[in-house]
Length: 111
Length: 114
Image (tube, rainbow over all chains, first blue to last red; front, side, top):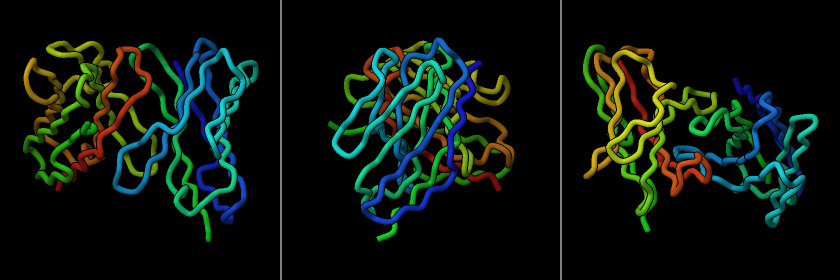
């Protein structure tokens, strides 16, 4: 079955710097890769997603890159701000009904 | 357009009691997913339901756990005879389609078993 590994588990950056979070997956049939942001006391919120037919997708300060050959995808946040501080989860589909999540990365942006 | 609503936000039960967690999906969404989250871990899939049907319950323990999504009213996740290991955050998500993409999550129910 699908196994999603996420690194690092914690990440601390200075405001204005970039942050990169990486995930690897095992099922070569996976074709959809979302990233979720979870703030304290709230549910995860979808921030960006990518399908396997593209290698990169960007939305303002957030971008996701996908390397299907190596089976890894990354979240890039540029010009980080304190409000970017949260736990970020990657995910990959196991089957049509089961989305497997990484263990999460706690991002802290220091002002 | 209200988001996914879960209640209660916090639920405290003693061992052996029953826990009932409710989820109202976003308006127009007929697909509901339940996830469980332990501290410092990702979300684990439990069950996927459509109105009046359980589509996939492969992630849900066979005993003590059940879920429903009736024609009228919220989806219910029911845990009978709770044990301390059931303590976790339980999240519900809804989707406009049935292909497990573009999930909209509620704020979760934190279950604490004493």
